[in-house]
Image 1: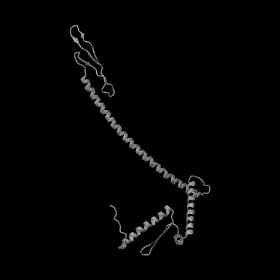
Image 2 (image 1 turned 90 degrees about the horizontal axis):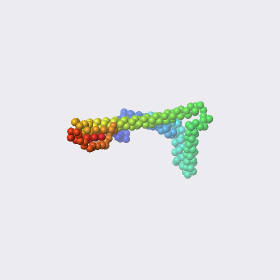
Image 3 (image 1 turned 45 degrees about the vertical axis):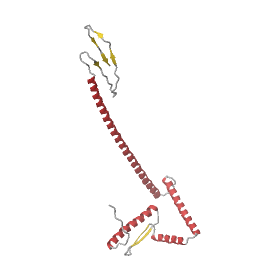
Image 4 (image 1 turned 60 degrees about the horizontal axis):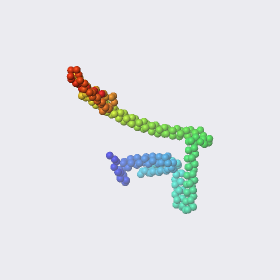
Length: 233
């Protein structure tokens, strides 16, 4: 069951207000630190509690952050077309510098332009490459594991299909055996020189093998009786 919606208003209970302040203050400070690290931003956070206690965070010095804020605020208030052009020129210069830094870092990761690096810089670069390789290998192993799992599932399905086909083949063999017994009983040898039938079935599953019949001419016996001989091949 989800948590109910909290009404944003002043908490009257002193204890609850203090607990809520402590939790949300810690969460706000954590978010400020993550923002500064992940986005390379200059962050300054100042909090005063209801009792007048100060809490602050700044990834750079708080004084430099406030000075920068005042400077930008003053420039924005007094901005004219010329100052706006200068502002964008500074932004372009800053972006070019960042681009140059990224290109240099990329070349160093490729093993180029390492002559100007110290031992400490090379060690840090090596650690970065090792961490990158670990991430690549982990992703590769995950992909291979997924592919192996998928192949195993396909193999199990094929195995089940083979079992079903084997059962069908055995059923067909049993039916063939029953038909063969019925055929032998129906076309067996007749006693006392009657009709003699020979039924040959191949080892395959063709139950409609051709039957060749030959009828011989009646022959007169010495005792005056005639016998018809039918050969079934």
